[in-house]
Image (tube, rainbow, N blue to C red; front, top):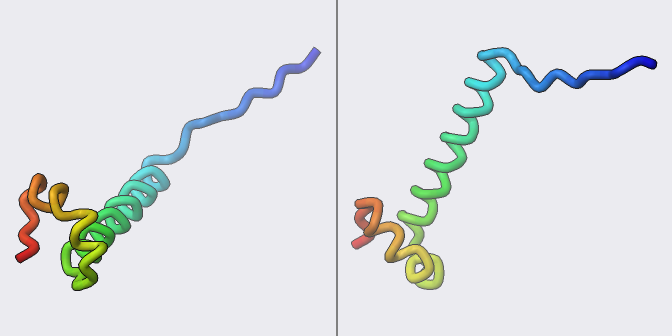
Length: 57
């Protein structure tokens, strides 16, 4: 019998790259919503935006 093992370890650079990309996407989303002039988007994110200290007015 043989057992196949799957290695879930990734190199540090791959994890750092994935983390950096995720951070950039998240920051882009916050600023896209924060600077949006569409009232539906503004109202949907209004309370969250103020909770994290992002000015919207």
